[in-house]
Length: 44
Image (cartoon, rainbow, N blue to C red; front, side, top):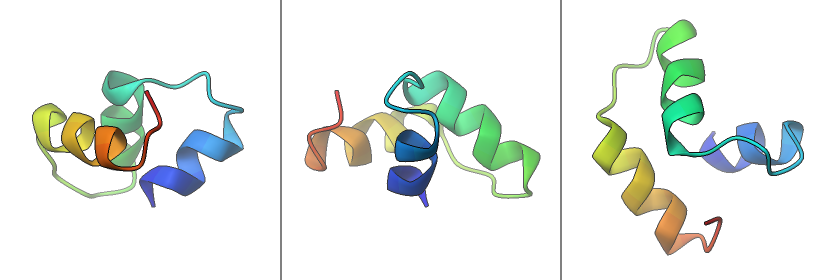
């Protein structure tokens, strides 16, 4: 889900915007967890 959002927005979304996008579709997730997952996927 995070990777899909990142690619959809052509790499312009950071962890804060990704978290807000996830929250908008009903997923509650901490920004630190999003940041950690993005680091693991080498998206930062």
